[in-house]
Length: 454
Image 1: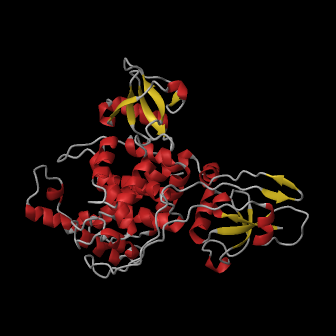
Image 2: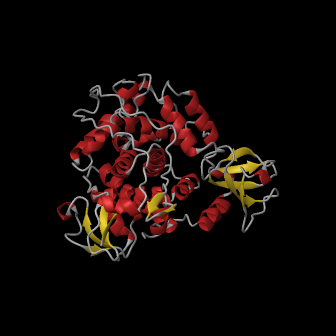
Image 3: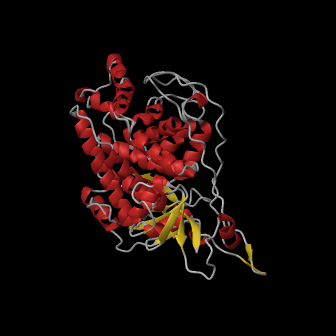
């Protein structure tokens, strides 16, 4: 018999009999097949939302959606915010007024199974979350590899564009699919890689960090599938126009002149021009063109305001500002994660959409995953998980004793646990506060060093 299964619940070994869109719209297969690897699941994720798999059973008739529903509790996930689409024929053309977008859920609620009657005896069935399901198929090692592979692919693309060559965007699209699924399965791992990365001021490193943060934020807003991939691609390429700005201006340590600042602002127009030349990337112009606009209308280049700015551009506006504040730059002070979030909060409803700022802070937590913290007992630790109900009380892995000696197997402290009620975070630390050897060893112990593709 056949059973309809969402893509996020598939496992290697399952036999796919048909899809919800028909075989003619499936790129890699023309008929029934058996799932072999996680990459097969990634490819299905690109084309459809669910498939029908063969399962053993006494009933010889193929099950319909209604029949499947009678034995499997239905779950509901928070609806993603409607994807805002806007054609841009010129980089600085003002967008057409759009209908009001759906209200962002204050806090997306994880899917929960409801009790369903089976025969005459009620049974409560627990439904596995999307994250838990993906974690069974996608390892943390795969997520780490996807991060490094995306960085390598993006670096190659930027090098070609810097040399005036066109690029094949397909490898980048494939990398983004893997990065998107990795962020859904292991967001904490990717967050820690970003926070503990090697000191790298390259455009591709900055762009990748923005993409990872955007994926985490997009999921918190309820975005899924291709909407997440579109957001991640736009994040990777939001500053692509900077490749056309002279290096001596970008690397200048003195304050920029008015003329130089105006030239840098041209990166929006230059970036949209690059995207327009590549059909597979052209649809991203409506995001890239407006990610420097501001809620109060004081941004550039079009000086539009409020909800006239596309949703993805408003998301990037927040994320790129946070990334810049927390990055070491030769012309600006580097802020701690908590200080950067405070600055964003102070600018809500001014520079940024206020509701989105609040959602961003909720998504990251007061102490984002990957933040190094000092505790009031003298120990130094690493935030490995946030507590949604107690965002100022994260889970911390102890790394160093008060005297600076490393802990080989530091325990995890869940600060919301009453046992640790007297332990508090006193300050956050920059990775640069650790010696280069110490940071390198920490990255090695966590498995974050660059490795070959999975």
